[in-house]
Amino acid sequence: MRYIVTCLILFAMLIMAQEKPMGKVGFDPQKDPQKDLNTAIVEAQKSGKNIIIDVGGEWCIWCHRLHEFIESTETIKKLIADNYVFFYVNYSKENKNEKFLSQFPKVDGYPHLFVLDAKGKLLHSQNTGLLEKDKGYDGDKIIEFLKKWAPAKKK
Image 1 (cartoon, rainbow, N blue to C red):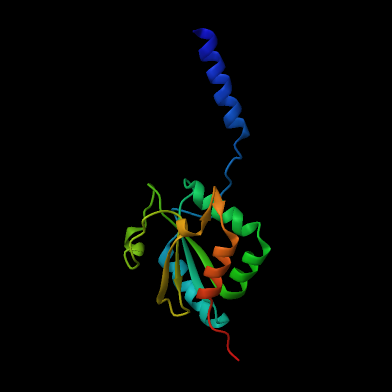
Image 2: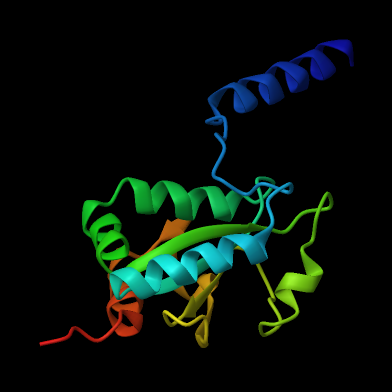
């Protein structure tokens, strides 16, 4: 019996050692999301961009997966940089940001994306589960989403 328990413990340690540690994404329970939104609106109006709010938490594996996917996919990073002011809103046991989030549709899962125009008007509420593929994200679906909600280009 002792041998079995020891093997199980070693097996668990081996599995945990292979897991990639999660780095920080940017979900900060101390930040004021209304202040961040006000700043984003000013920046969006100056630049002619829309706004994406990424709601989630450091506790959320899918939030980390989305962040890593975006950071490792140049096409998606460029689409965001060219068309959006992007910021994070924390949702965690430390700070659920309920007052701020109450102005938007209910969120059923995390991460969740809200797209706003340059004045801060809600354009779209995106369940990111619809953008997933296997244990990650589908680049084509994310590109389609980003193109669909990008601001119209002025001629």
